[in-house]
Image 1 (cartoon, rainbow, N blue to C red):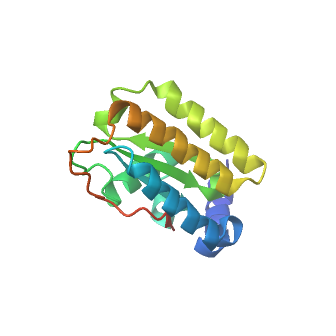
Image 2 (image 1 turned 120 degrees about the horizontal axis):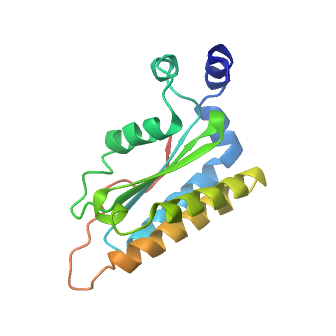
Length: 168
């Protein structure tokens, strides 16, 4: 894609476009769904929907994957007690979905599983089912976290990160 066209596409969209497309009520329900999921495992799950890349990232030709890793760090998803945080990242301007998992869970789940979850979420977005797609993705990631990091009644299970989606 031409660099100028890419820059224009990213600068055209903003946080308001994301909120109009997904809806504030839907974002609240997604946050509540994350909270519900986190009661069943010791992992931390974050959802981030970014309208477009910052200009500096566009100029450097940053990929969606590179940006997702940067956001993973910015949101502190890497800094959980069991290194089992997962970020579901959507770059709205490019319709890209990336899942970044910390080393505690990434080493146990084959990369193809993360790609499959991303693909299903992408298909939901193509059908306009934004909320349903995100809820399903949270369920799928949550199921993996339950498999490898189930919540134990005797263990403390603090909520280490905010549950509501990060919209940029």
